[in-house]
Length: 362
Image 1: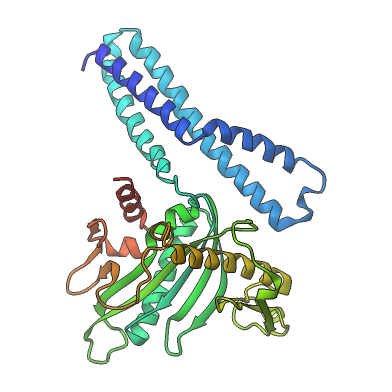
Image 2 (image 1 turned 90 degrees about the vertical axis):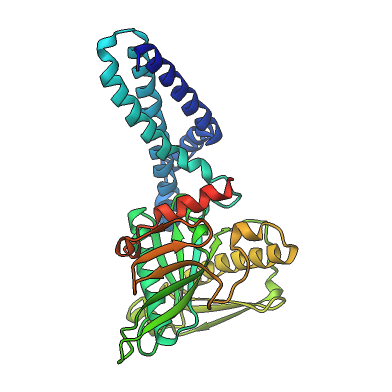
């Protein structure tokens, strides 16, 4: 490849970077970061620590994203300058640099896929054991571990809102509040039924079993006015919490159950010591569930939020995890598959998410 060809390709890459930065509204994000920095410098900013942490994390995420794009833009322009010098002795080095920059750009370009209405929001994840008895409950706990590992790698904060453990093993259901950058955009791909095929550790005859779990993903709406909730439509109940939180939680009426009377939607939160904090979290989840209810009622944006309502049983799975007689994880929506089952169950689900998000744009 001649130095002139390299120069042209660097120009094309520079233009792609500029176009993508416009799509991602990087200039708007710079403005938002300035506003957040001013807010964080104000006296009393840390008086409300929960809110302050969220603002601080948002600022950190924006700063990191802006810096990534600033860096690749600057380095690409510098390399273009070298290519335009016409020095053929630089061609081999520039060829390698071009390849590296194109790979780096592909990774950053991935974030263009987060263009959905709620993609930047935090998320509410629920995992429910389906058909398969104790195996399904154990499978639900395996999925929980997989997603916790994934969230840890993304540096997302995860709070357990409510949990119901299985009698023998695993979990019957669990609800998580996940906070971070583009959480719903990433996790909406995981919404649906997950199927496991393996030799059951709970079968004395070591027979192969199939079990199912349902993963439900909703965007957190915060205090949005999009969903109006009247006080008269709510029944708020308090009770003693159990499980997470320690002795202080278990001996006070800190757990909160909120029932939305018109729809009979129920939400429970018991992870915080404070009844007020549990109520605030429960209201966030209720707003998400009411949005889902309204969207399904209108039959609009349903697929973007959670897809068709499915039963956690045979034939409705979005993804299969086969551990016996062979090893394979396959997504039935995109046909993407891998034999590295251990890595997937250890939280490496990025490729499945990326393939699903790309399929939405086709």
